[in-house]
Length: 291
Image (cartoon, rainbow, N blue to C red; front, side, top):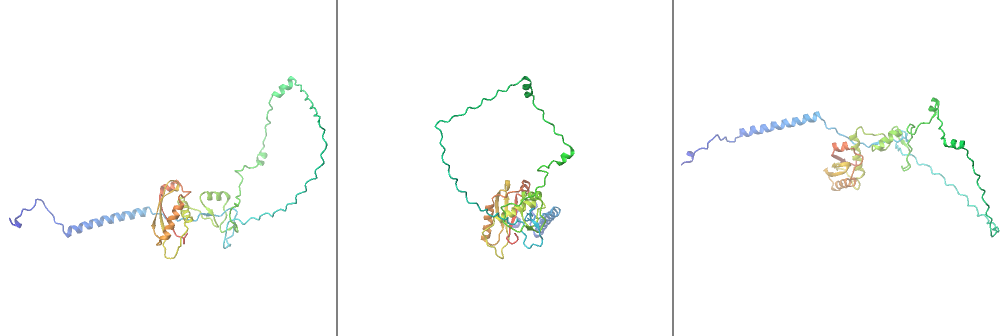
């Protein structure tokens, strides 16, 4: 049997040629464009909001507003220490008196016997009756004269004694005692201007950035380095469950110092549970030039 006389297999066998391959590539490209356009539509409908961390500073009530001061410092001025009072020399000991002669036997005076009180039946009944408390009558004038309670009185915040001395001036208007204590409870610090977060997310991002920056030490920054981007994953209560460098600075020593700062942080205090549920993993940019 010759080659051209061999039996052909049953069924229609189509050979792959350039035409079918080009059609397949065209279909895949069309599907890719559809998915890409769909992702652009979603991002347009739900834009990603960039939250910028802030310093979170407040002007305390004791500071004086002075916009012309080139270097304002809201800390209170140093308190004048009282001058030491010179103590008078101690008085000399009195001259001891000569001992008086005491008789060998002292006569103990007899105590007088208490007089017996006679009670009649009428007096006993009067003692048994309890006295009725006198009712206090209040008029409208007396009620207005009564002092206000401690909660109603406006309290002025005093400057703490453990702050370093300063000029006691600021650029912005000092806050009231109530707003000042509320801002401190939210995580703000004393500063020469009022810079408060506009949302709960911005407040938490600012606390995270400040906590990492305060623990970042022992590095040498020079021109040409890129900001280090640290990818941080949080656990319950703001505990750092995992962290890694997403973008390197270009200097191994600087990158190691950022990882050491994350180890020192351990837990970020003051983060709300709603923030942790929404942002279990965030990016922290470490750049000493902008911080």
